[in-house]
Length: 114
Length: 110
Image (cartoon, rainbow over the protein chains, first blue to last red):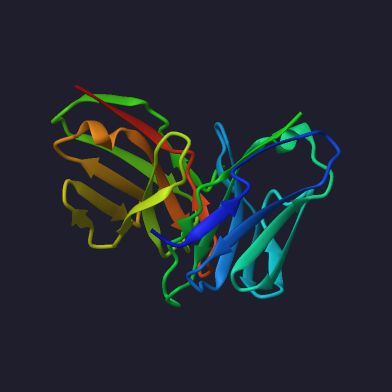
């Protein structure tokens, strides 16, 4: 399995509070991604990174920001959590080989916003 | 229209049976295709890549039809451990972003 960890694994927070989720990889992959998964929607891309300090928006980026200050870490921040952001968040990595598009996922973070 | 569409199932089959299902994709520029497996409350895991000529990995066979823009997965001699949700995944043309189907649920019963 790819060396990807996410922290925390579970979190309950109140509406309006800031939340930061961390993704850490030991695989030296170039690309990193944050997804959310909700029933009936499949995985939806929030933000992704194509290198240190290089990030871009996915299709559901409103209310989220990201940072990548080093290759190993990709942080997802909810500036002011809302109940609609209750979800399971997965981090993924890819790009070990330039022609390789497959992604490998971390174990996920279950976030509940009350 | 969703980029990747799958029959959600569930497909409920007895052990030893063969089960097959498809997905369709809308982006004709897509170049890479995958099937992922996701167990309940777990992360998706790569099951297999799908190649133009079709490919087989043990009891699993994947086919790609570019003309009709669909991908299929066939599972032979189903095991209880094959019970999972299978995600059809397609890359978005010539970049590293992927589009995911919502998944097809397969339940194998004893």
